[in-house]
Image 1 (cartoon, rainbow, N blue to C red):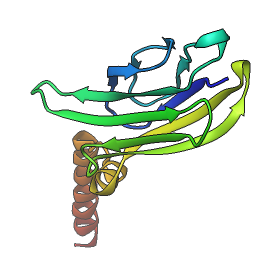
Image 2: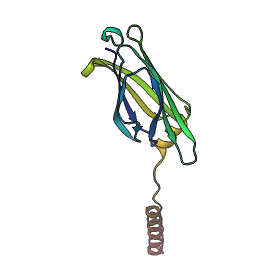
Image 3: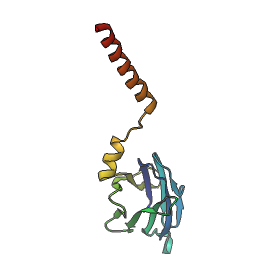
Image 4: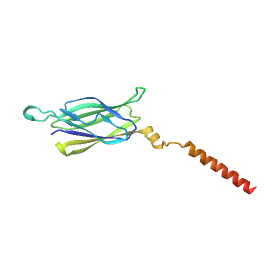
Length: 162
């Protein structure tokens, strides 16, 4: 049986919507939104049956799309090609590879329907990853109190020594 489960882990701050899903699957189950900073979002693709109830392979594509308020997009294009017999392919390409990347793994076949269990981890890449890992919220109020306390201490010590 050619069944596919794709589990998404999204470590970015971008929520993605699944769009332009076209393929030979009989059914698609699962939400069409991959929330930001989420894990465990699974879509399930199930095959059509042919003559004498023989199940066909699953081929198709879909996009994960993030759109900001200005209309700019980050698109990750996915392709699946799991024929009833022969080699399997699962690939993803991000149109904004300087910002976002996806790592794909095939965890094998197991579970209900003996499905192919594929994983896609979406994360920041390159300079964006460096920026996000170094980014910390600045607390101006705390910095002000720290600086005033330091200056007050210096003035107090100078006055005591004078």
